[in-house]
Image 1 (cartoon, protein in one colour):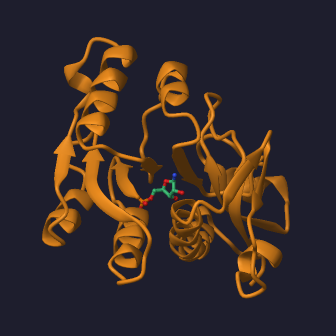
Image 2 (cartoon, helix red, strand yellow):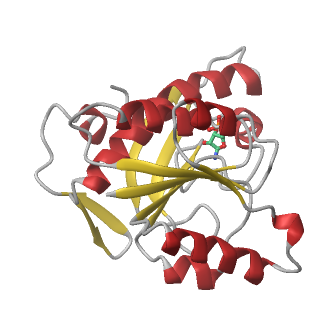
Image 3 (cartoon, protein in one colour):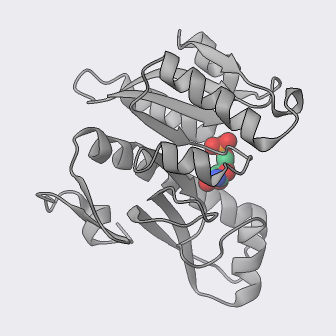
Length: 213
Ligand code: GRF
C-alpha cells in the first residue's frame, strides 16, 4: 500500500509512521511526506530517511478548493492508496474528503467523540475527566469525525498541565498510529456505517481490546 503522510510542523507522528514502515514485514510504504508549511521541521526528518517530500503551500492558492485540488492531483500523480494526516492543520473540503473516501485517516489527541477541535488537552483538564487519550479514525467531512480504528486511554493526573498531559498522550499516539496504519494496509479495517470492525482481531492486538494496555 502506497501511503502519503501530510504534516504541518513537528511531524513526530509522521516519524513514528516512517520508523514502523521501515520494518521489513510492514505492509505499507510511505512514498511521500507532504507539508502545507515550507518550514515544517518534519520535512528534514523525511529527507534524511530518503523519503521524497513535497510542499504545497496553502498561501499560494486563492481558496481551499484550489489548494485541495493541487493536493489531490499530487496524490494521484504518486498513485497514493492512503493518506495519513499527522498534525496537518488545514481543514479539507468535503469534495476532497469524498474524493478520497475511506482512504484518509487522522490522529487526534483525545478520546473521540470527546474534545474535537483545538486546545484539547486544556479542555480535557478543565472538564474534570479522569481519562483522555488519542484516536486514529477514518476521516469524514466534519472535523475530527469518522469511524474509529484504534484508541488509547491515559489518565489525567491532578497536577497535570496541558503540556504534561500532551506528552503522556503523545507516547500513545506514536504507538497507535503505526498500529492503525498496519491494520489499514492489511485491509482488516471493515467500515460498517459509523463503526469499524477489525477483521480477525487477535488477542495480542491489545489496544483493540484493552484501551489501557
Ligand atoms: C498531535 O498531537 C496530533 O494528534 C495532532 O497534532 C499533533 C501533531 O504532532 N493532530 P506531530 O506534528 O505529529 O508531532
